[in-house]
Length: 151
Image (tube, rainbow, N blue to C red; front, side):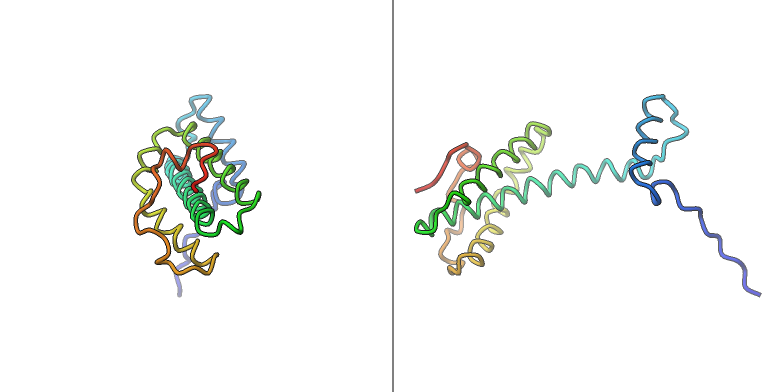
């Protein structure tokens, strides 16, 4: 005869995430420490940091790709490209304002983001990847400066 398997009751975290967030916020505000779902809270807090890192890296890659396209396809420059660069700078600035500790991460990831941007630019433009400089030709300050458009 088979022994019945224990089936844990699904937690609020698993069944209604929004409700779980509200319950955790309420428990924190009221100091009801025994009601906190510590393991899932830890997981979510760590996830928030990773999410911001992914977002800022993705935005830098997109900005760098458009800067490369701006240089290497001057005949195709458009308001759309400019709008994309403006938007990425705004979003990066917002992320850095909310989390200034991401700036060293952004500096550390600049080379990797540039390498990815070169691959993306090559794929989008049809240019050979070797068309683009191996090292990023821009400083982080230049990249993030509002209105900066390389010639």
